[in-house]
Image 1: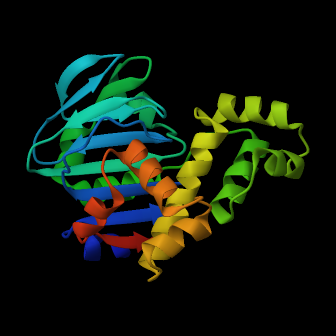
Image 2: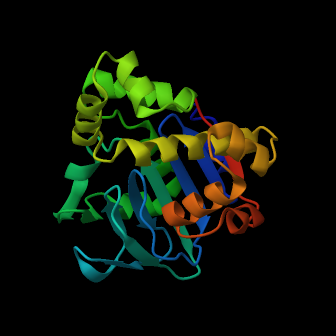
Length: 239
């Protein structure tokens, strides 16, 4: 991980990208109810936030780990939020002190993470992911590079499509369709950070149209892509 990039870019609103992962640190947005394709760790850097989900009802907390495909509504004030999107959570789940079926609360080192959110970004994006079936891991790697169907990936890992889809859902804690959307989103962000315009980046990543991308972005993150880009958040790609 290119840790040297973090101190230089930690003050302004920033989105860091790493294979399979991303982290945003900056002012909170007015988010609609949404459902992420991968796990999301949320930290109220300057103040607690309110999280509503079917699993836990309404809670006012400082940190939460929200499972993939969990509809939720997060309401924060004017302070900074840290959102880390993770395709695998590794030891993070066990670090949460209050656990429910789809949402967990209270990171055991919450106070430390709040004091130095840049260090939190480095820690969360750099954490070693847990063990996973090697065929699912290969699917992750392939989808990060190019768009591909379930049948194409299944053939590449020598499985039938039905067996592959079952294995993927079992080990990835999300569906193949939703992970494919996540991988596309990361490729869009990487292309935009390199100077490609959003429409071109979305189509090249595999979205059928700009409208398809816009709908998927809002459903996944709770705001429009145009709202996010208007915030002038800088995008940093880490290796």
